[in-house]
Image (tube, rainbow over all chains, first blue to last red; front, top):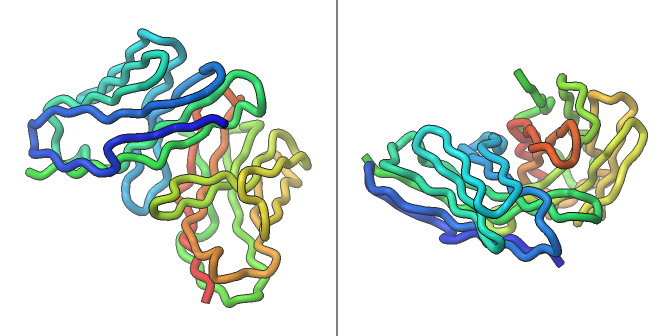
Length: 111
Length: 112
C-alpha cells in the first residue's frame, strides 16, 4: 500500500528563521510528487511537481527537492504570510494514478 | 485562470436529508474528484470521474454517490445525511492524472 508521511505535524518559526518540511513516501515506483499550500478556509493551491530524484524547483522563498525516498520543502527566511498548511501528494506508477496525500504540516511564522 | 467553483461555502442540514454538493470547473478538465478533509485524517478521496457519466469509487465511498452528466459539473450526493458526514468537502479537477489537481475552496457541511 502506498504511504505518504509528512513531518513535523506542526512547526512554529520566527520570521527569518529558515527550516525544512519533510515528505517521505513508500510507493512501488514514483510517477510524480506534488506540493500544495492550503490557507485556512481555502482549498489547496498547487506549488510544485517533482518527477525524478535530484530534481529541484523554486518559487520565491520556497525550494522543493526530491530523493528516491523523500521530498523536502525548504523555506528560506520565512515571512508571516508563509503561514499555512503544506501538503504533499505522491502519484505511483501503475494503478489508478490517483495521488495519495499526506496529512500536512501546519506552519506558523511569527513576526 | 483556472477556476473550480463549489456552490456553497457553508451548509447546514439535518440527519436523514438528501444533500447535494455541486462543483463546476471551467478548464475543460477530464478528471474531477471529491474529497473530504477532517482534522488529523487529511484528505480522503470519496469518488472520482475521468469522463462524462464515468465514475470510480475512492477510499471512502460509503454513504455517498456522484453524478457527472456534463464535463464541467461533478455533483456529490449524500443519500441520507448522518452526523459523521459533518466535514469539509473539497472538489478538484485535473487535465490528466499526471497533472496537478486544482481545488475549489470547499464546502463546510454540518449535519445536525
